[in-house]
Length: 454
Ligand code: GDP
Ligand code: MG
Image (cartoon, rainbow, N blue to C red; front, side, top):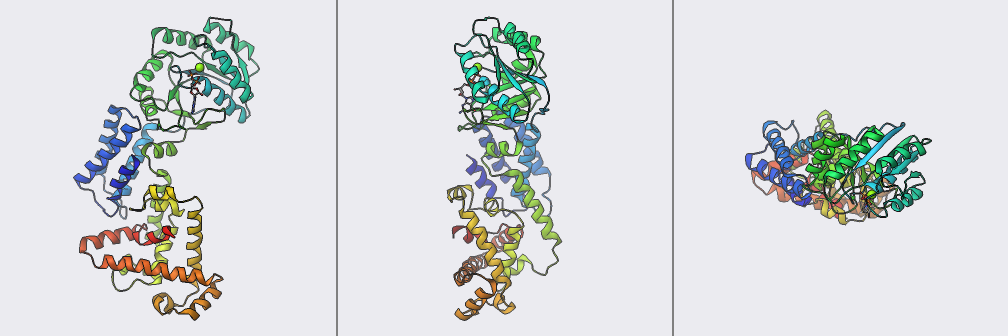
């Protein structure tokens, strides 16, 4: 799903302005992505309306491509909606967990207790679920695995009494996490029960636990629990599966709260504090959006400052020299880790990068570094006329740079490939040329594509 959003964003790569059609296309893809990530329909419509308004109303800053401009708007709007992680001070507190049966409350209670214990606090879990057979054993066992205190009473039928007793019995603990019963669906007795527990334990915050796969049901649940006990944060569980957790956006929006934790597996350590960038990037099936947009911005700012007589346009006239290639590499280096930059280049989109072994990109970055050293040890004449470099010059250059002759030959080969690409562009019409130059100016020029293939 992310790939179609990515490819429609990629078609904007070379443009500096968006026309109506572009915006419509992009909005449609964003809607598709969000809907299949289980974000609620109304919310998707609201979000896409504000994205559309900004995308058509705001001029991309000078030097920013339409694609990056839209990406940034999408990212900003989602960050705006989802907010920062729920504030959880590392101090004594009582947390009440609410949610439907099977959403992951008991698992999350033990996980959160484990998390607080790693932060140096002394947590205890209080199990008030008298509804589900085996709830006591399950919670007790998980707390043993998490090495945290536990209170429950399998012989007591009143959850409110268990909650009260539990707070007394675990008085030595400083963080109390109160687990509650769920039902298959929202039922009046469930709501009544949790209201009573809430009054008995007077929690500092109540968190709603949501299965990442929850779709359109998130809204009603969030509203009901918020009305009953006041929801101060959301825990999204089972993010280790295929579900993207878009229901959490609905819950956050509905309760005016934020996301506190993410559950990413069945063991007590599989818990993460929420962080907007990773969550949103995953939601859209895109790479690290925050880093990308920050990097692009930085690279553009730096390109503007550079006191240099080299212009990307020069590439389009006359020959493509090693000097041009070095400039291109510098532009790319400024943008950070190569694999993330590659992710932004049309035609090299994430799919291909995902297939490369992890260390393949390190090799390529090493190679880029080696190429740079080699070019530094070439004469001006060699840089401008790479075709004049014969075997003996290769040997001298390699020795001067402290690199293998083979690497020098690879560099020359790489240059030849790029030169051919450029020549193809030179044979194209005016519009294509402008697109190419725009790409080069943005530092993500297609000309470096050959580096990834090795
Ligand atoms: P409760 O009814 O709300 O207390 O839910 P449980 O904590 O009993 O969890 C229901 C099921 O979901 C159990 O089988 C858990 O192991 C599983 N579960 C909970 N959280 C996660 C998670 O983050 N990842 C995965 N894969 N499974 C989870
Ligand atoms: Mg439970």
